[in-house]
Image: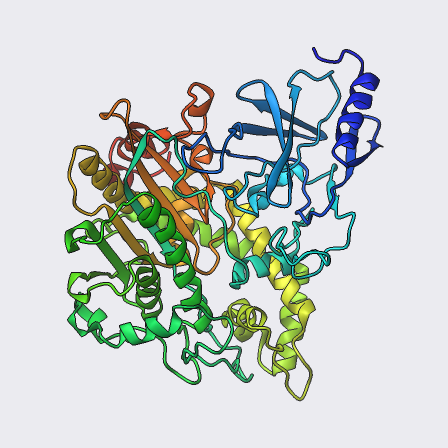
Length: 596
């Protein structure tokens, strides 16, 4: 053990941090733990306790010169223990975008000493909001506060320098904050996003990418009765914020799309939003910009860096599929335009998927419907037990002058989120106004419902059966490409929250937030250059590597130094392991076997 005495360890640790211009103070928590208050010069970082991190390995030609070791956060009451793959804790302190030091401490700490883990950051590599997937059990009773010594302006710029130190971040709260969560959900385009897509050892070759997206920001699907609809313009105007440098070119290119092949009713849908007053469910300019940014980010990684598609790419190398809503079609086209700028419309074949869970020809599954009904009963039970929520509904019903039951049926959170995301005042009547307190209570209940949903597992059972057809299609395609096929190397599914949410649940990514507007889930297939017959996958959610959060690969990194998951593990999960919980060996059997 590096330090046998707790006092000596703390003294040495404080001295090292002081050397880096950090000031460190410790406070006792119930006499058993420690809270660190750290002042970090010229930084504006989120606050949190411990980071469930997934790092990258050395990549030739990139700025990554040192691996961020894969670590696992274990939480139990007050204890927050860190178990590292290489028996060291790696702290990377970032200053003005460059590494200034790295400190290595022995893993072995005296029993009873709780170590606070700071943020692992890689210059130009790690997403700037990696704390989004913290396990909630780590949020209390310990906390970590990172405070700039010098004042940091709201735009993220130091007053002495115009150079951006860190993007403007939403500070992670220690507990459920409905306003913060709503802002995350809105996903308003502000600063450039950093992501972990496309990172692998230099001898690995990227051979396929499959992307599942949620459509961008939209107008509400429901209206609150007897109130004025949100006054939002769905015309695309490059001069109006949020905008994108390629928005005007996107509009012009969409007007030339008659040569594209569009399945069924897709050909009758508009290729971009164009109403001065948005229609119900219509994609907004914000939604278009969100996916223009997604496509641009993916292009820089997969086209410019990894050459997944060359300039003479063919229609057979793409697979595009969307549901029959204009917002999903337009989202797909927006992403595709910046991913493959000024693409040839004759190479575009957009397939129509009638099911929001993309079950195609395998939608007949009675037990899937059974578990969905049970999940809906759970939701209802939680709602009727929430007295605060009922009081809010009663109050809102009085304001708009309708029965409480009618207001509840109108799903007011959908409309209120639109007001919130577009910074429009909540509606008023002669009786009064719907306010932020109404919004907070409803949104908080929604978050509590998501938390209980993870605990009760009914939704998980539904998700396994709902997503198997889509995951099976994904696995089959990856296997074909691993065998040497060159078709459909880039796949884009444009879908909904009710598509992404069960996929995340089925994969076992339980810490992921509910899909925000323009959320993306990416499956990367890599070939080992040293062993060409071996293939691996990486799974990323909104730019964060969640490969080792999946149920089928969460233990693999403990036995391997490769920062990926073997393809066969994903194949075995989809072809076999998904059915074990149903005591079945096939999708057909699991869909018809009643629970014991």
